[in-house]
Amino acid sequence: MSETTIDPSEFRRVLGHMPTGVTVVTASSPKGPVGVAIGSFVSISLDPPLVGFFLGNQSGSGAGLRDAGSFCVNILCHDQLELCGTMASKAEDKFEKWEWAPSPGTESPLFPGIRAYVDCTIDDVVPVGDHDLYVGRVVALDAYDGVEPMIFHAGRYGQFGEVPPVIDA
Image 1 (cartoon, rainbow, N blue to C red):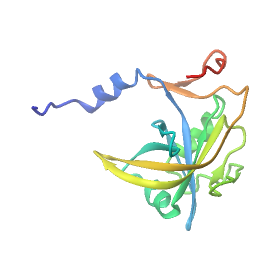
Image 2 (image 1 turned 90 degrees about the vertical axis):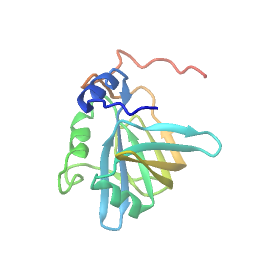
Image 3 (image 1 turned 180 degrees about the vertical axis):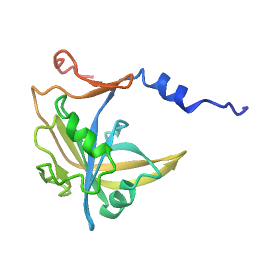
């Protein structure tokens, strides 16, 4: 197979047509709380229960996540754009203005008003291109009804018109 050069901005533009959920992944590292906005959260396995997300391998949050050995995925609601922006930033203390409580399984930061959370221990970290795939073994999770999730599509944050009913797959 021959190598093809794909322009990174074109790659991002085209793949931006796939809507994604918006999450904040948090951890309690020995140096304090860690948080990063993530749009690549995915379910991996039912048995055992595994989830994953991708984080750029140059991210300063990666070391804190690995040191913690666990993380909590906070699935954001449509009205949590400011929280998302803070966690996406390179701010020195991303948690100074945000209320949070320890998650039940790993004691990672858990924000009030979220759509759902998935609390995990790190099962594996796999280098993939310029990112690392963090694989988490689920130890606790919950979801809250009636709150619209935040989505990212074509370079914009938004929401559904209404929360669709649950459909058994």
